[in-house]
Length: 453
Image (cartoon, helix red, strand yellow):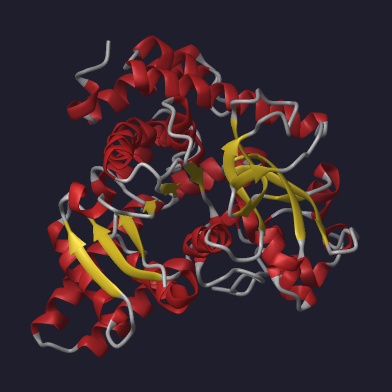
């Protein structure tokens, strides 16, 4: 029997235990015998990594923790990245800086995403360099935000065995599957766009019949999915399933007003929740009560999920309503589905962030797009999409220009290119705002900002 090693970079993060739970459920199927949790935060690794080890107790899966990248990556078959350099504090800072300049404060969209990319891209590239040295045949699954921009940087630097993953890209497929009572892989989604800026025009059954379009006009279906945050008129106008992050574009002024009016930003809220969780786990571990520790984590995860994008919910939406088709595996499910196909399982039809390779003619061939793919033992291939409607194509091209300029500015540490990147973003546009944002972000991150010119 083959034995495989999977490494989670950022394994001390709050989603680490959920990831390990998903691996436990599929370990035999994937021949994964070892999961290594790598993190630079020793406290989080001790507490949340310890919780992951507790979950694996009694299963045929070895879960280890380490702060040493070379140990974690050597002989790895698959690597998943989910890191946040600077921790929750920097996310909260990014959001406040953006709001102070009159633009959206959100960690992946627009200025907040740019600031995060400035910190994540250099570190992810360092990990990728080391991985290519110690495990050159390994695949890297990037969930580190902003996932599309980070994956673009990886491919620009020649790391072709890398793919960006995001559970949001697959919500339509899973929602239709749940509604129709079929397995998600029995359906063929037609997804196009960029990470957190994508659309789904169809979800077809094995006969080629589109099941999605009629459901987009079915109130009960829409009410049970995140499509409920968009009015029927907008869904009809766009003509597709709309990624929930497009709320920040289609309702730009409303999103800004809602976020700016709250006492705490999402980043500040998450920072406080995370600190409370860690303190509680510290107390529980001191009393040696692993069952209570797991209960505390479950409560945390449930409350955090329930408050996701709460300001976008329609007034009559039930509080904390769970989204139809929202798989409990999240990003872990996306990665493990693809890994299963790669190690000899049935081909997997899903959506991921990969070079477009001409399948989306509105973008360049080497532009990383969020697009329908099929994964099998030969790798991951994007599927043909063809031209897309003008409304979507225009926004997609504009944001892709921003992404390419953002990557270039980060790789060259060029302030001028960074300003150009933010000027090209549809939520920023103006030079005065873009230059002010760049200078503020660089000043707030002196460990990286001092190297820019």
